[in-house]
Image (spheres, rainbow, N blue to C red):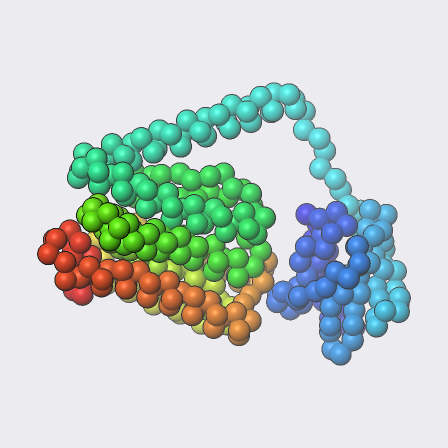
Length: 338
């Protein structure tokens, strides 16, 4: 990717180009939305004018600029250096193939360790239910990534911690962050509702156990604390307003998490808070150079409503079994009520 600085009407614009394709456009550290009416022609509105950028001759170190569909300038671009091909390509391919195979081995080993660990602590039935809930949750993240065209490496189960959906690419908008973060708990909500349906259809308590366990796990993940899913939604909304608002709100989330971990003795949550605090620091330090397109006012409100609906769905499942005679089914709601 090539970064170009362009001056128009005494205003500075930053272009991110991938070959002749315009990936992102910034003005005063704010992302600008643009249209692509024709191949290699990009248009955006600025100060009441319709600005066009023709990138068809970028490889010839030339960029055409249009104002209201009239060409006004043909800029000469600096030399674009192409990365030199690396030597030993066969060796690199062989190494990549080995790493690909080893990734599958690592996934299988972590999954086996997770099942064994949870079975040792609780029971094999509980372990299988927990793994199923984690896999469905992470699959929701993976499906959202694929929807946005983001390449994924798959799902990794981490013993006594949870799961992780790993991607090869980076997100480009705050909206992507919101959707990817919420799709995990949303798929978990489907699991919870399906568990309730199967419980009434078969009268087997294990399905009710899946429903409440999935609801509890996903509700925990929706806490507004980084790096949990709820924290990512909060960060995307707050940093789409003003950077200092984003910092303040995310720091309040960290303080809330510290209070929660102290009150309930959740030492693992302290580790999450440490990782989340680092993410907040990096986000704040790079706020002026962020490539993420922020949410507009409508997007902020819609994201908040989506978050609230998913939270309400999981709470409803837990409340449904709050009066159950089974201590296992009523336990999640007792924890929430405390």
